[in-house]
Image (cartoon, rainbow, N blue to C red; front, side, top):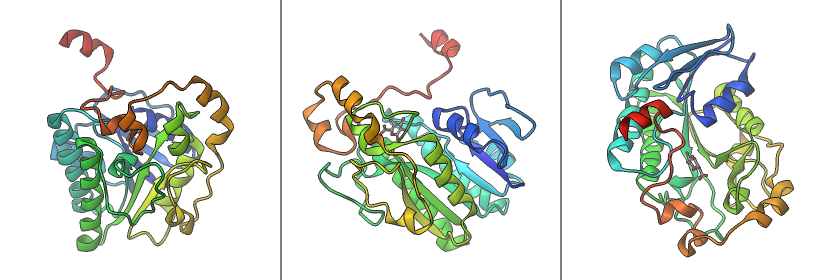
Length: 274
Ligand code: 15L
């Protein structure tokens, strides 16, 4: 059984992925936040990947890395720099030094959030990030390209939409990724024998998609879920949004300087900070 490192494993996406991949891989889980391993196939290593020593420690001896860790929304530059630029660099560099060839990088729809909603885009479009967070994701993609070309690493960049058991609003009807489709895409990223450098969209088979995801299809991705089943409920609840956010694929991220961060400090630490 392969050993797969998941960084940012305590986050939302990481939690769905752990559940979906249980029994398929030995999972080494890392995060800044504490986490309790679910069984004998899971092992937790607390780490701050903005420190190279931590990145080297957690990447040693694994077969593949799913790099989810980082600051996961639009926000101030300092934490994005630390987690998504320095942290991302450290994970790629530590993987190279430890001889781990395969990295799956969780990039985001916000790397291309300034495309308009009526546009259908594929994996070859010029990036149009919708904020500092989006720029950090483009950085990760380009770092992956460098490490593939220069060091022969195998890099699978997933521009993830929104992972949730069900889509939560109109924008997410276009970018929703169900947990089981996420697991299918990640499994392709780990197992496909011919990955060099790939960009794919991490979305389900949504009728309202903005993406031509033929690159993922070429690699065998056959998503099973479609957000359309939830559309009547979602649209009945929808409130009018910001005019700019309604035009662009990135929604709220295109006009906000900060978006609530679901991966913020644990509640106790937050109380202490106030
Ligand atoms: C992302 O990239 C974020 O990590 C996630 O928290 C969601 O905000 C998602 O995009 C989205 O666009 O819904």
